[in-house]
Image (cartoon, rainbow, N blue to C red):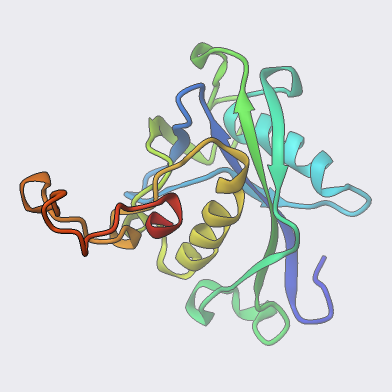
Length: 191
């Protein structure tokens, strides 16, 4: 099911534990890591697709999680031609995704990567909120960053990725009261 622009409707899932770490899955037989995601079937709402994909890929059911938020609109990525089957090239451009932020209320042992006959992941771990995007396939990186940024508003003070943080001098080099021109940093300076 493609939209008029050639994008397949899809959902992405960012699952948090109580420490605001994200669930990070290693793709089967690959060295890349990603969040759970999957297509929206005809007649499904994005939320229904999210719960189905969560169970198929991670083994968690609705009672194991709490929905915290979702993206306001579709986030899109284009798939390079060499990843697209020859018979659908020219029609299929990529995916458009609604991203959900979930809080795990179940236990780690509730995760079961072998629920499906065709598992997506062969390992998983909890990772700090700003995951290293260099281990994500290149064409998905921008969407991951957009989803993490937009959904970060729903959690208490997630840190920005190191590359996005303002440079701060070591405490020994910070201005002292004897230097009146120095202004203390505020929360808005750090964002």
